[in-house]
Length: 204
Image (tube, rainbow, N blue to C red; front, side):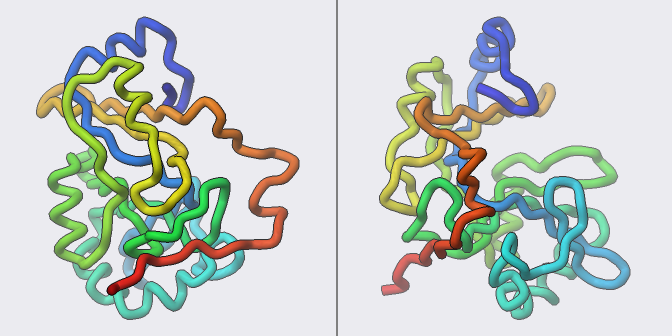
């Protein structure tokens, strides 16, 4: 289990000591969307980026019909984080509800990420989708690992899960658990290969 670091046994046990909210870890390109004086801003891994290019293929077209609503909802206070899923990385998806799946909303002044319920309400308000919800409750490492099954948005096994503390008070803690055989390839990374597109699920 890891967030920015690998948890040792004591940290793992502490993390598992309370209820957790668990979602599928989606294998996409991390994308942040925020509002500024000149309109929407896009960021990836801490750096501002422009829509388009091989990292964010299709983003320019996707954002246009949503630009005004998102700019109004985000203002200058909120940052929306999600996975841009147009390009296949290591896991292929063919049942996506949309190309962008939200996993976080960050409130700048409060210095805090919204809880999943607030995030989901925001997603509904702006007409977007969140990463797939899996379960909430108390877990052991084994039962948490048992949630790593077939993707909710595809036919392949999911990359892993992201668990966050479900307690209403206390620090916002989270960790990700990646399936044992999942390998983020170095010498044959998706960025160096011919791109394959994921697919949206049929509306019918």
